[in-house]
Amino acid sequence: MTTSGATIWFTGLSGAGKSTLSSMLAEKLDSRDIRHVDLDGDELRRGLNSDLGFSREDRTENVRRAGEVALLFARHGLISLVSLIAPYTDERRHVRERHVESGVPFILVHVATSLQVCESRDPKGLYARARRGEIEHFTGITDPYEAPTAAELVVNTAGQSPEESAERVLSLMVADGLIDADVLTAAAIRADGGPDVGE
Image: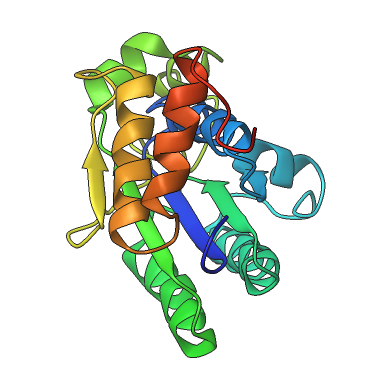
C-alpha cells in the first residue's frame, strides 16, 4: 500500500504531543493496512538506549541509534514513526543525511507546542522537578532545544486536535508519494459505512 518505506520523525519539547500524534497516525496507518513500526523515545530509553544519560554526547548517540533503527525498518518497506525530542540541529541533520544516502524518504515533523503549554501539561511532573533543580540537562529548561527551520511540516497541538494533525501528516505522505491517494479514499468509504472496495 506504500510505494516505499520512509521515516516520519516527530521532534519537539517534552509534553508537546509527539507520542500522541505518532499514535494517532499509527492508528490511521493500521486502518489502511500500511505496515509501520513505532519507535518511541521513552521506550527506546528503557531498552536499546538504557545505557545512555542526558549529556550532549549521550543525547547525540541516542538520536543516532534511533535514526539507524528507523532507517533499517524503512529500508525494508515499513513506515518508521519516531517520536523523539532530538533537540539539536546537527543530530537531526545527520539522521536525514543517512536516509538521503540510502535513498530513503525522511519527513521531519516539528510538533511546535510552546514551552508554556508543555510546562502547563507536565504529565510526568518533569518540568516541575527541573525547575526545582532536581533534573539536570532538561530540554527547554536547563538544556536548549534548537527548533527546526526547515521541517517538512509544523504542527501545534495546542491549536489543533491530534486527529487534525495526523490528517495533515497523511496528506503530506500522499503528496510525497508514500501513500496512494486511493488508499485514503477507500479507508474513508469504509469509515463511513460504505462498501469495502475489495468486495
